[in-house]
Image (cartoon, rainbow over all chains, first blue to last red; front, side, top):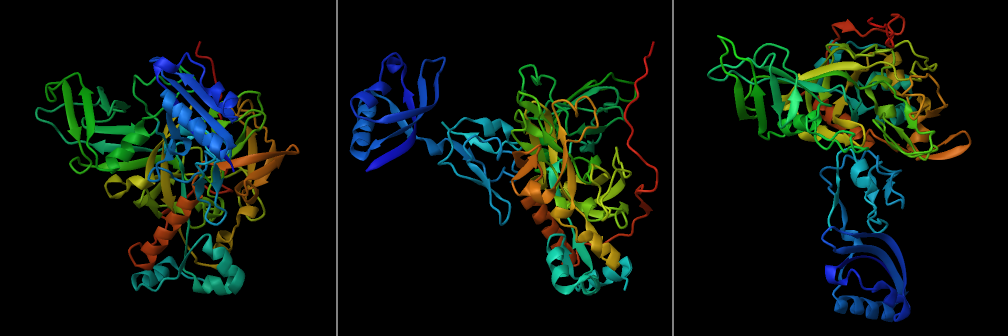
Length: 136
Length: 401
């Protein structure tokens, strides 16, 4: 069975200069699509990517990353809507590149589908009441 | 068939008034016909919840011992500067004021995360606000410095004071340039990548009374979750714009100046908001009841989103350069559908005004009236109307030397 998940990987500074993700392709036959990558001033690496492949290989790949010392978090927890702050205006809808925000045609409330979110953060600053929070 | 406002108020007091929102009334009249609906329905409620930059508040903080004359001095509320050019302890806080040390647009686009609108929201939420003042000192007001917490419950007056709210219709913003721009109409993507609009359309107060036949000076309204009043026409009130046959303006037209006691308002209806690269402001909830005194007045409230047209304006060139170019006219039905077609290009649309909140406001006002808690008022004077010759002027610059 094939799986595909969006993950946030954190590389401690001792791992930043080592090739790790490429092993996922070579050794575990997995495919990846990098959505975002950065190295912080403290030299911790952050990589947001979609990882896909056969379930068994996927599990082995995740095990390899964990054994190496990479911290893994699933992506959907990372941009969170503060429901009390959101006014359902809709300013975010056309800003989001992946269409994670949609209008409910019945009541015109703005729905946020966090499985579509790629944590580009464009909505965070484009939201007038600042209802979109980042949780890394 | 006609009813007076006094007769409607009698029914409200007895808890017998029939009230519908400006959204519900469309369906009611479709089923029952205009003349029957005008007989049965007494009040139609409207609502809007959008960014209104011309909002502010004035406060009288009470006299300290020894006394200080803030007038002519400098005062900050949570680091946001306020206007002090009146009397001794009265201050005026504007929604778009920002702290002196805000980076503004030095790194473009600036975030403007905290400003006067946010102070108003926190004040109404009954949070303590830090007041820091310096003054020049006089014989009768000797003090020169004051640093204290203030709270809305402990100061004298706290009045919401908005000089232009509830715009009757508004432009639809697009960007014809090849780079993203950051405006008061939100983030606009290049080459008409998106179109932002800002009106509740068929629920918006002045679009349901397009010729200002019931709304005037003295009209009691829902303002910021409490009760307020229309106190004047809004600045830039512009009734003489092109209109459709139904009287509905096809351009931004009328506006209202409104006042109300901040102490009875609620923070969920006065929300401090930030426009990336533009500034901070206050998003205001406002609703107005329309007394159904005749079939004609009812007819105006039956307006639907497909009857209301707005101009599409380029905010990269036409707007900043004050050119009156209109790229297209589109209806609110199209805008709310999620896309408009302009120059044969399909453009996704988004709103800056919250329609669900507008529905909620019209609903709250309806409940207040049905329960007999909110009586209607007869305007003491009309707003400048279509035939008044009143217009909004542009600035004609004249060299000083």
